[in-house]
Amino acid sequence: MHSTQFDLTTLYDNHGRPINYVRLAVTDRCNLRCFYCMPEEGIRYLPKKHLLTFEEIERLISILACMGISKVRLTGGEPFVRNDLMQLIEKIASIQGVQDLHLTTNGVLTAPHVPLLKKLGIASVNLSLDTLDRTRFHNITRRDEFEPVMETLHLLLEHKIPVKINAVVMEGKNIEDILPLIELSKNYPVDIRFIEEMPFNGEGNHYPTLKWTYRNILQYIESHYPTLTKIPDAPFSTSYNYRVPGYAGNIGVIAAFSRTFCGTCNRIRVTAQGMLKTCLYDDGVLDIRQLLRSGIDDEEIKHQLMSAFKSRAKNGFEAEGKRHNHLPVSESMSTIGG
Ligand code: SAM
Ligand code: SF4
Image (tube, rainbow, N blue to C red; front, top):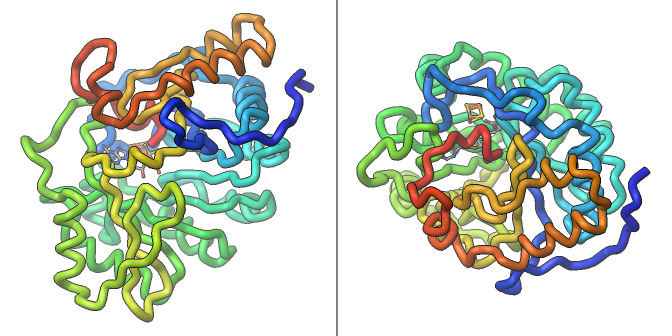
C-alpha cells in the first residue's frame, strides 16, 4: 500500500482550467507503422528499463487520483504489445478515485481481451482505423493487419463497449474513406472522429500547408450530408460534434493541428518514459520516472506535480514556443501517447 490518502479535490492549473484526465503511454513500441505516426524504418525504441514499471504506473495513478484526476486513458505505442497489459488494467480499474478507465488501441491484438475489458468496466475504447479498405490499410499502416482490427471492432460492438473510431485525414491516403466511415455510423452506435494530421511522426511536417484542416474536413462532410446537424460538445471535448439525422453514431472533427480546444484543456500526458507533458506540444516538463525512482515519498511527488500543473502553457502554440530545443515538433506520437 502507498502512503497516499484519498481525498476528492478539483485540481486547477494556473489558467483556471480543471485538470481531471491523464493519458498515459504504457510503451513506445508498436506492431504497426502508421504513415502519420512513425517512419517505416529506423525507429529506436526506448530500452525497457526506461519504461515505467507496472508498480510505478500504479503508484503514479494513485497519486494523481488523490490529487483529483478521475479519468485515465492508457495508450502508447500500442498498449497491447506490452506484456500482461490486462493485469495493469485490472489494477488501475481498482484504484480508488479512478472513475473512468479508457483505452486507445490499434486493435491488432485487442480482440481476445474484449470480454475481460467489458468485465473490468472499461468506459470506452478508441480504435484507430483510418480506412475500411484492406489495401489502403496496408498502405497507411505498412502492415497487413486489417482483419484482426475489424474483428476487434465487431467484438467491441457485440460487448456493447462504447467505441470511437479515430481516423487521421490524409491527402492522397484516405480521403475516399471519409464517407464509408460515416456510413459505418448509420447502423452501428460508433462515433467516428476525423483528426487533423499533426507533424508528430518522427520526421516533421508531411505537407508545406495542411490541406485537410478541420474546416475543410467539415465542409467536405457537409457537402455530402446537407442535413448534418451540430450537436452539443461534451465538456472538455476536443472534437466538434455532429450527427446525421437517423444515424446511430455521431461524427466528430478534431482540430489537433489548429489547436482550437486549448481553452478548455483538462488533460495531462505521461510519456512512455515517464515524462509529464502538461500540453501535447511541450517537450516534457517533469521527469516523473526519476522522481518515482528517487526514494522520495508520495507527498513530495504530489508537490512537484502540483508545481508543474501551476506553470502550464496557456495553449499549444505557447507550449511549442517554449520547447527546450526551440525546434518545431517532430517526435513520434507513439512516444507521447496520442
Ligand atoms: N497505437 C494506438 C492507436 O493507434 O490507437 C495508440 C497510440 S496512437 C499514438 C494514438 C492516436 O494518435 C491514434 O488514434 C492515432 O491516429 C493518433 N495519431 C498518431 N500520430 C498522429 C499524427 N501525426 N496526427 C494526428 N493523430 C495522430
Ligand atoms: Fe502504432 Fe498507433 Fe502510431 Fe499507428 S498510431 S504507428 S498504431 S502507435
